[in-house]
Image (cartoon, rainbow, N blue to C red):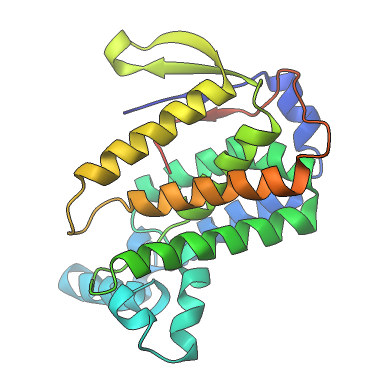
Length: 244
């Protein structure tokens, strides 16, 4: 499904001022990708079969390999963090960063910089390790920030449930329809659940990491901020399409 989420630009500009962590995470992921073999822009990795081999080795070094995570040394336990900054393709990178840009700025503005950074990294780590635990015998490498970004979506659902979101659905001829954020995000979560149920054991999208990340983010926000006033005025960010 393609879902484009658009929020009022004025509210985004006001809330995104000083959201250094979100912008730094986006810049970091972009830099890692451009310098890595998947971008095809670094001549040091060669071309053709050499580039493919370099990419495979690169992903296994910095990504999560479930069958090695629980049997390897201390370095293996760092890969759920390093994998958050590694992406497998331009589409993979741009889709994730678009969602981070859309929802991350508002979540960071609500949580504060240090708390948001710690939340992002810890929730991403939990999502990665949970997926690895559920697929402990798999040799497929897991990379990408989608688990952490899903956690941002979960936190956003609790913190800003009434933010107005405009969604474009292909099966409705891209007719723009406005819904509260809670409705869009719960619909997204349900789609991830359906996709996770239908997904096989081979390579593909790690839907389970999305579900764990989203649940972790929502629960964290509920525990941490349930005694505070949630923002209910329309707010959010720029544009987002694809999915994390």
